[in-house]
Image (cartoon, helix red, strand yellow):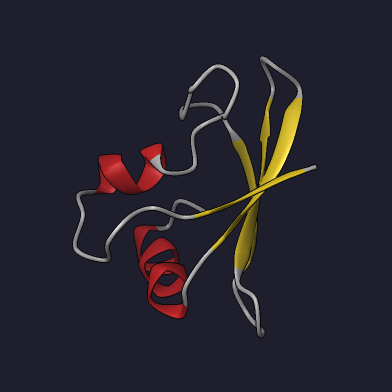
Length: 74
């Protein structure tokens, strides 16, 4: 499984937050399957692209985890 770190600021628009979780193969950000693990020491989002069947994990800073929780995207 691939791993990455989130690349968005907490004040970025929703579209940029979602785009930061895009598939590393086809760059799609819609229709992704996301499973959040926002509690604990290393908050992250496990993502899966149904088109490519690729899976990856995106690690977040605590402020980014809060931003995703408020967005309701995960």
